[in-house]
Image 1 (cartoon, one colour):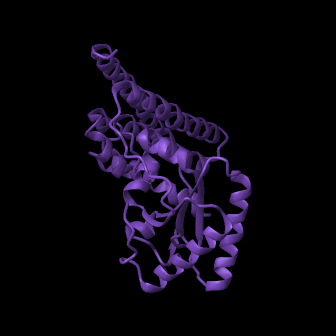
Image 2 (cartoon, helix red, strand yellow; image 1 turned 180 degrees about the vertical axis):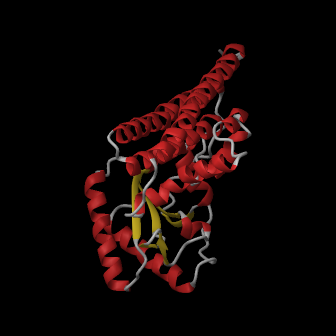
Length: 298
């Protein structure tokens, strides 16, 4: 894992050194890891904009993973880290928020060995701020077909389940004439289904909300996805834009409106994506079962 903060401005590097000292005083940390945008180098200092007439701001956090041994009581340690954030902000006058994740190092290593996407991203992109040398981090191993299948089933249950829930909320809201809430949840359903397709093939989930980009990332694995929402006419382009824009517009714009008839036209596309997602899962499971059956170690 990387250890250098050389890509950061000196002030940021100094703040992280101070923050690490406060963390070590508060909890028996085995490792302290910076991850997220400040580790990758694409942090946002402060982004202010008007989205659909609403003033919004965004600022990147210092995302910090604090690893402790089994036996350290997580609730009490998390409370201490909450106080660290307050002390850090007060003593450094830093305007950068801090976001902590506390985890047992044995559990983190288990996730790495299993190739869990969020945790392997931290291992690949993170920067070690402190390591007491007692533990080493596991290297993600190549999963066999049975292990891969287990994660595919877990991710399908989680992310397809989210998609189904969003779909039900959207349909109910539409029937209750809450069309703004309906289209937002149809977007969320589509996003969840597309993440499902990506996860069952790669065990990876990109940080994307844009449906057009998600479709592009899925088509190499599931070419049938191109039938989800063809944009070969001006009308289909208009409807897809309504659906894609709903993630921001229907959430932030208090004056947002959508014609009920447009939801009626969009809904069949969402239903098709539900079926494509289910079919992609069934196909992937069948492929993995065939590999398992042919494995000499079965």
